[in-house]
Length: 338
Image 1: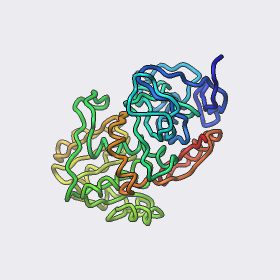
Image 2 (image 1 turned 120 degrees about the horizontal axis):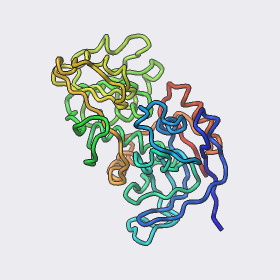
Image 3 (image 1 turned 90 degrees about the horizontal axis):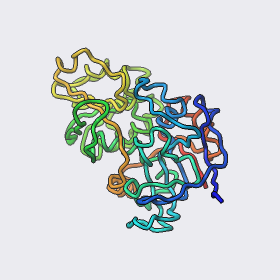
């Protein structure tokens, strides 16, 4: 008899109302995998992109998908079982992971559930200094910030540009972070500061106290002053919003500077970056248990803090997606499964 668990599944694409909390088959272990009893799940933009059928992607980029689909990638929980060929993890270990991303884009990540089977290569021991909610909020956003600013950590082809993304030295440099109060943005601020940069954070004015507490040297309220109109001669802009509008930040950079749009689709500059002597580079975040293990001490000792916007039970995933759709998040949304 097939064991069951509670999960949130999609049987159709659409708005938050298509997220259905119901019984689903409990995953069975395959070679190289670890079965995790999930305590908390981080909510990320790819979750609602999947829910919408990746309508924001060009048709030729949309993966073929079969219903029902369990969305989600980021988890924190406790190991329940390990496959015979797995070493380094044991039942009872507290762990966290970004599960099968981007390999699970077609719905194979399956984190909105009470149990998930994770490749041991994508898993790391949870930092002991934070709880499951904060650990679940970290993986995708923190790996994104890390792979943009610190180290790619892999040599997989970059689907967004012909050349690999290369982080730039930050010590003594001036870095502008746009979307600085969001899930990725507030972590970019902290990593850039940790690396010795002078950090300018662009966000709404009501986030100023938070961002200064996280290490920002300057905060620009984009509602009062457009940062692209008031800031000049920075070394690096990391636009945590990205998309077509990121081109506006070219004017803020000094010659030899760099622009990193976190969401690179839709960027076009008609050669302006080349004329200005500016490098534009983006990348696709990828799962990495090794990098999560490397990052864990920073979370453990408070060098990097994950800010929580809101928490919902797994059964209320619809409400979590409705909160995301409101925008202006301060940190991360998390689902609790236990």
